[in-house]
Image 1 (cartoon, rainbow, N blue to C red):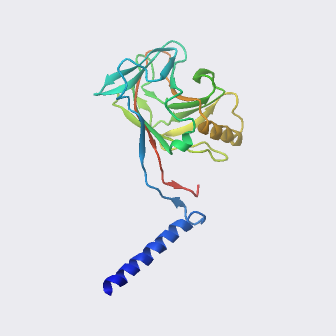
Image 2 (image 1 turned 120 degrees about the vertical axis):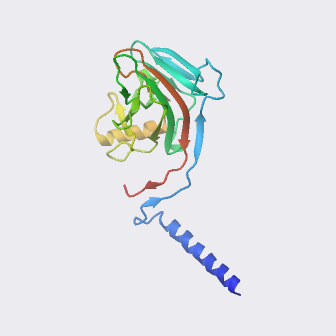
Image 3 (image 1 turned 180 degrees about the horizontal axis):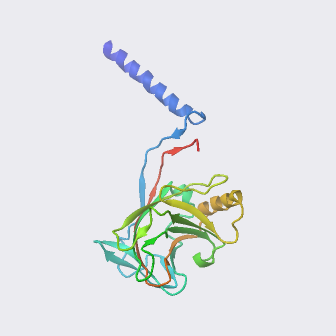
Length: 235
């Protein structure tokens, strides 16, 4: 009988916990939504042949290719004369919000002579026929404590994949999303543009320039979506 009573008590307790969790969906006092984190690897280039580009393209770049580095395959992008980019329009989904809550990747950088030791370059998303002629474009700009340092080992960057609020674009401890181009106006209008962009991207890429000398070298690896993030709904 004691065993049955214990089982009943446990069953009742589980029902109470489940009811409390479900009530948080509409209860303003429940500030946090908790979920089980999971990761989905988009590409680590290990299945790509060396010397190919794996559906990445370059603009004014002196070289784009899969190379072997640090014991694994990575995407190498070399700066060239003029505004230089590397980008893809096929590997990542158009609706980034549906894909996950964070995009993680690893990056390594060599600045070369007379270029900054630390670079704030990170992911660019855009709408349009090309990254350099985009009608709407947003860059995730790294803050001063998260810069990619020349000749350092690969650094993991975590980019928030979130909708903007009515007045602010998403940010985290690594940096801040920033809209570029003639379409930017008020914070509220920028939020509408950004929310449309992050759910309807034409492509994703990186700006290769960090200074005036076209000597920069970049290496990218391990692009991964985090599928579920615990977040504060009170913000």
